[in-house]
Image (cartoon, rainbow, N blue to C red; front, top):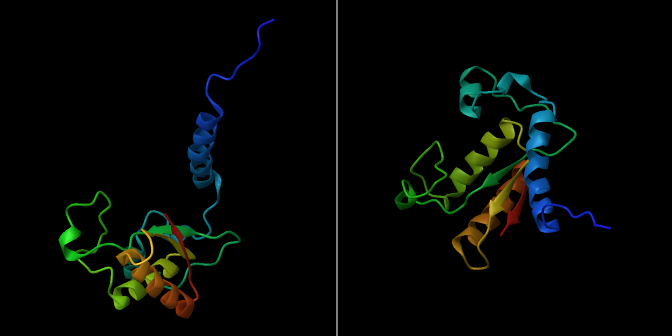
Amino acid sequence: MKRFRLPYSPWSWLLIIAIVFPVLMLVVAPRVDKRLQGLSAQAGALAGLNEPAPQSDHPVLAVYYPWYSPDSFGNAADQPARQPYQSDDPAMIREQVIMARTAGVNGFISAWFGQGDRTDQNFNTLLDIAQEEGFTATIYF
């Protein structure tokens, strides 16, 4: 009797689920604030929609890259809309937190390269500002 065997390893299935599940959640999950759908936060502000979006019953998080400097623009695959700028600037970090919160984002998932790295210092600044602004932050590494 031949034993049934999955066509992929368990790690492959885990990877497939890790990719498919978030995509399905984005497609299936309802949008709370339809006014900003398809608009950037800045365009929404220009249209008079700059009040904070209603809070949903699940967190809305965005990936945050705290390593930009004026000389890094043009070299990275992920280019921010406003450039060039310095990621170490607390005023810029505060502005980004406020813009994200206004767009309905509850927190940032920040890139972090370890203690003593520039991303570590910027994450500490982000944590301080997030606490003051009623925002959340965590890391990925």
